[in-house]
Length: 365
Image 1 (tube, one colour):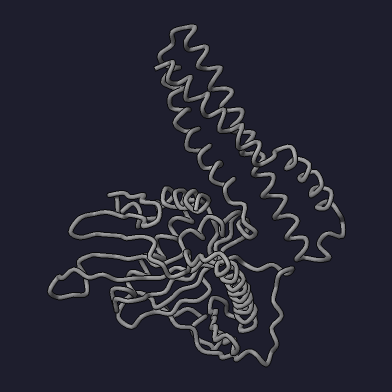
Image 2 (cartoon, rainbow, N blue to C red):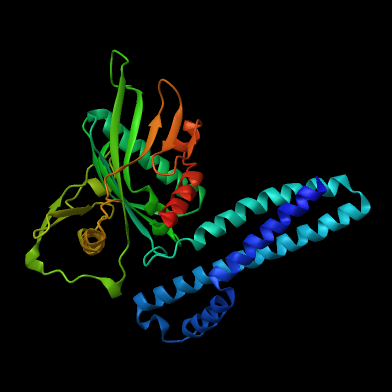
């Protein structure tokens, strides 16, 4: 056991060395010093957008370096403890090292996955839209199940979420929902969830208890920043105000504060109803529209490149994952082949392994 533990610790040290080289920890420390100088400027908050960007970037880089340094110290301590345990034949300490190796393996794997997220927008917050697709009331219910799954995932990671707009189905579930996830690398992480999710189960809405297949689509786009906003002319927009819908009797439902914006040239429709103020909802909806237009532009540019390459893979709408609840229990990713029989855990937000496998698959493809 001692030789195996030593080998595992050496493997972890090599992995951490690779992460250090990829992250370029010394460069990050230099970046922290530069950002701290900017953050200490007494006039920093004269421009609130720029200030927020600087402080957010500083917090994220500091977190990266701190996480790496903490793992380095823990790994070093584990090696020392192993040597002491061997020299003193201390079985209790060996057990302690074994537990620490298990914990460090998970933490270092997680940090390693983060180093794979180096896309242009991977560091940003994410806007997630879930839509019921084929399957009638079951699809609407399935969309609400996916919403719960992602909200529980974010909750497990202490990520902040804010629901902007929900369109409820008549019988059960939701037609669509859009929400924001605020966390470092939220977009890079959740973007691998984009696509069609397929559910097979005995329908709770079928009086004959027949098996039904339903589909829901997940769209994930990065939140835009001031520097990459697309100019939109007022005459390109149709703005409608309406009364917010949804369960309950909250004040938000008593006035025409919800806003729906249609971008006439593209037909893109966005809405927001989470604020009491019509102006706040309009500002948020415009932000969502900016993000969708930016993503549309990115897809158009990518399509041109793919056409030159002869590559048509990876388009949004492809079925990415199957969730089977009957006649057997299994969740299987169509891209990575990763699967589990613990469907209840997955639907409760335990999707880390699927996301990790998706990020690794994306990097290799």
